[in-house]
Structure formats: structure tokens, C-alpha cells
Length: 383
Picture (cartoon, one colour):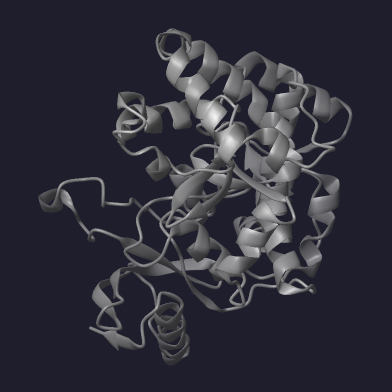
């Protein structure tokens, strides 16, 4: 393939994006190391409470690594200390090497809620004292107790724990029953963790390089999507990185009025990428669908998750899963894992206009349904 210096075809852009997202790229490593490599390149894996099919972080990792098992992530967080939980654009698991770049948000949070902290200082001190002396605790360990008195009512203690977590004075050592296990940073962070607060320019460069690493190409709005940043610093950093030739401008032929950025190293790898016509049934919180404008621009796929809107207003259903086939979106399915009965229930299926539902796709799709049913704890597919 001959590549112009600043221009990509839409097809090449899609293939590049999907390869950087590990949908067409194999990883030659031990399974747990693969999990670590995926989280490091993607920059984050979103956490969400909904488990209609399976928790978002499990689904995202499984989509890329069918050999994924929950204990792999648990060990990377607690034992290996290579992954931590905090806030990206939402609650997420992130590579430990990014820890320093969470500090500006923690400072911002502490400043925003400084009056709440002042009113609840006694409660916060008691929480810290108890975790210091007793070790890691969950919010349920602070449920109301006559012995401890009203300070240990669950609601104010829960608020206190989350305040301390979002300001960095506590960390999430693990999750049990999907509930955080809180501990002190000095007991959970690696000794060499950098704790200097990055400047606005440093944070901007981090957001830019992280987005390009994860997606292959990325626009300015995608760099900072739902993330705390200094807008002028971001623009200044983009110009500096262009001047230093650390990033390059990219134009996608078929997309007007949008400028993208990449690196020469990433662009040089395009010729080695091959689109495999595999089927992937994705989480609504998957990294490739979470930014809806990018999804529409690159794939022409208009997607919304409808579990947050009233039932009468839903078009496709409560929890529709996007279906990717090769480098195109075939459609979406509204599904539910009924683990009690062992049935993976297909409530409805919706296919994109013009999509060819041929024998090749049908066979791969049915096989993938069996795989996702098994992954979500079911043994039978029900339509």
C-alpha cells in the first residue's frame, strides 16, 4: 500500500483503529501479560455496574482475549501492582504507569468539595484511623453499629470513603462482590510510583499520546473526551508535538472538516495490518464504541445505549450489544444472560441497512453467540 504523508483512506483508518484496539492483532505472550499489555495500550478499561450480560471490564477484555479470566486482572491489581482503579472519563482500570496523571483530578476534587471535607473532618479522620489499624476495609464494614455509634452509619461512611478515594487519600486495593476494598496508598502503590503533580502541558501530552496509542489516529476532541484538561495547554502541546515531529497531522479522505493526528511509527505499520472477517459482540461500554461521533464518522454506525432512557422511548432495547464483522458494524442485539436458568436470551436482533447476512457471517455469528453465552455463565441460547 502506498501511503501519502498526510492522508489515509477511510478503510485504512478503520483497519488501523481496530488493530490498535486488538481486534485484528494477536499477542504472543502469557495470558496475564496479554491482559496487562491490552490495558497499557488502550489506556483504560471502563467499569460499570450493569451486568445484564457481563460487567463491562470483563466483557471488554474478553472481546480481545478469549482466554481472559477474572483472577488475571485481580493479580495485576493486588499482587503485581501493574493496574489500578480510578477515574478516566468514567470509573476505570488503568496501567500503573499512568497513576501520576490522576493527581490533577484528585486536587480538583478536593478543592471542589473542601467545604464538605471541613464539615466531615471527624468522620474522615475516623475512617483513616480505622483502615490504618485494621487494614483494608469495604463500605459494608462501616454499617451502623451500636458499639461504634452514629459515625459509622453506612451512608455518611460511604460518602467519606468515596471522598477519600477521589482525593487520593485512599486507594481501591481490590473489589469483592463488585464493592471496593479501600486501603492506604502507601500500602498499595509500588515504591517507585511517581507522585509529582504534572503540569498542564505534561497532562496534555499524556492525553494526546495515550489517545493516539490506543486508536492509531485521534482528533483533538477525542484527546480530551470527558477528561479534565486545560484547553489552551492542549492546543499549545499539539503544536509543540507537531513542531518536534512527535506527531503528524492526518486527513481521512472521506471525512470532511475533521483533523486527526498520529505518529510516523504507527502509520508505517499499516501495511502489516490485515482485516480478519471475524465476528465480535461488544459491550456497550467498549473502548471502540464509547465515543459516538468517532463511531459514526469512521463506521457510519449510529449507536446509543438505551438502558438509561424510559422504556417507551427505546428503539432497540434495554442493553443492545454492537456486532462487529471485519471492519464493519453488522448491527446490534438486545440480549440478557439468565444465569439461573442457564439461558442466554436473544430478545431481538437488528441488522444495518444494506448488510449482507450471508452463510459466512451466519456461521461465525452463531459460533460467537455460543462463546459469549458461555462467557456470561450460560449453557443455552434462547430466542
